[in-house]
Length: 112
Image 1 (cartoon, rainbow, N blue to C red):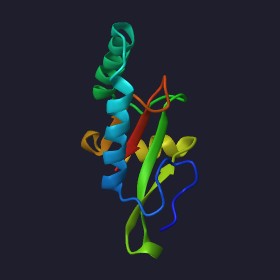
Image 2: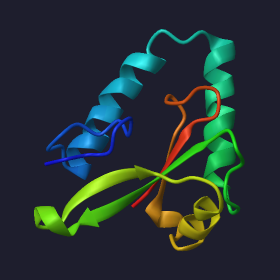
Image 3: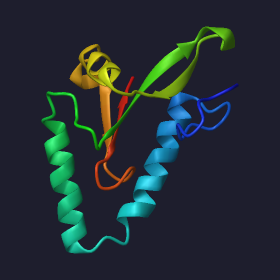
């Protein structure tokens, strides 16, 4: 199953498997954190939890779209420019996932 280059999603990887891999990456990333770095990450996550507006230029935003050619397999797409705000507004807060340990120092958002 084809995926988008540089999306972080592996060929044939489901959305669920992608997020499971992200969780494993996160655990490895935060395990050796010193207290200052940990506090920075926690602050970033706290701010993300309150995020109402579309994130600025630094944060990457990905949207998951069903690929009709592959029987509805979900594919992760990087959102650019003005599309970022439109896709952001099309997703409720419960459909937005933030990961602080990727794309440091800005983090990444997944809209799904």
